[in-house]
Length: 130
View 1 (cartoon, helix red, strand yellow):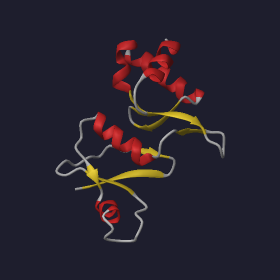
View 2: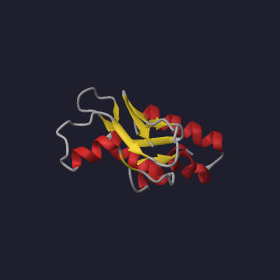
View 3: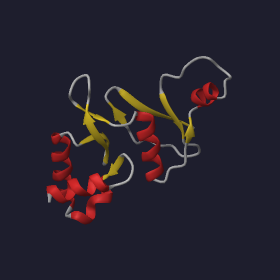
View 4: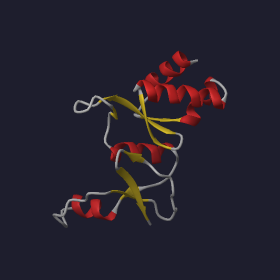
């Protein structure tokens, strides 16, 4: 089971793996145990409930770290979950050249939906605005 799960994760497009995508490989508890083992092996990093990112060892600490930054992972996750989004207001203003203040938060505008899903990598947390 573990080897089938590992091969399935490696063959998937993109960086984000949703737990529900793997349910055809076994029962819910088998998939959960397999994902937990892949996290322990350093192949995946858990970024949210049922949401995992492909990982590689960090150059600094040697600990597993996502291959992409949180902004990229969050955008892909929202797309995969079917949630319409756009960049947060601060990021849009900065990209348009209307401000020189660099946004330090990862923020997505999900209007009119109120999203409560927590996505986190290390200390970085995705915030939502409407």
